[in-house]
Length: 376
Ligand SMILES: Cc1ncc(COP(=O)(O)O)c(C=O)c1O
Image 1 (tube, rainbow, N blue to C red):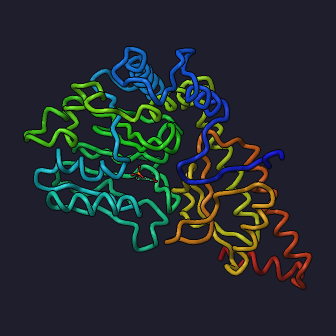
Image 2 (image 1 turned 45 degrees about the vertical axis):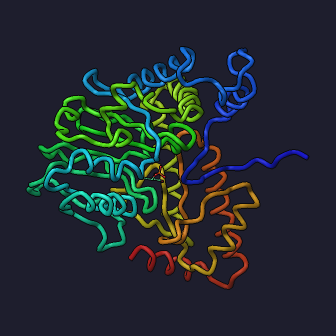
């Protein structure tokens, strides 16, 4: 039986390019005609060491990482960074920008290590915007921000310049657009969105920052140990690093982060335009802070949401249910998702609207009133 075509809008682990999956599948059986699976090669073999090196070089090239930064591959997910950062760098106080669920998690972990200053928060409006934090006095060792709020659907487009070390969780928009690495002292990202399969966390860290760590730490919590051992202090997430390498080669072929950014803008604009046009739906995030990676929206009549999920699923649209704390829908538009999948979702939204209006007694005038009320 033929597998139906699926359009995977899941938030993560997320869609990867088919060609990358095919190469990964073949390497699981027989890697580079070696007769060995990528799953059973020694991480200390020269062949695998060259995979680590190539992946690092691709990261450097794609994100234009300056020479005085190190690129590390760790385990423990982005969540481990929530505690590893304060363990190393929080001496007196850490400043945090509270933009949602994952920022909150980072704040919770930092509190184990010292004082936390929440410099600004968008909690008052359910994290639907990115608070301004330009003119705030920072009496802290560092500021921590989250570039893309995966659950709430907001993204930072203008990073504040703060004058203290800036650490950023870029888990859900890394490699989706260019970033000026020099604006940050430490960037981290779980691989499972735009980089590769779950299991690896990438760190880009300014070497001078590591010199400021003035304490002895457990080895697995010490960035210096991973830097000094070129990410091979212990057994690394071999498969995740390997597939990330394949995926970054794919990204380079697509024109790098500059090329894919254009596609990501088109995909996001297409979907947001439909959300704004369609009388049944409304977007959750402040327009200026709408994420290109995770689009959150709801239905004006929430009782229709289940029906729309099923309606869309019949067209192969999966992974669009909103996070449990937010509800509604969350549509993720990571790099590997083609524009065609967005067009299919948009067509489903239009058709669903048509179905509702043709099967109801709502007159055109009422429809207009509805719309006016929605945007009032
Ligand atoms: C922005 C952000 N930070 C942190 C995390 C947690 O990542 P992990 O599951 O790798 O610990 C996620 C996961 O989705 C995320 O989106």
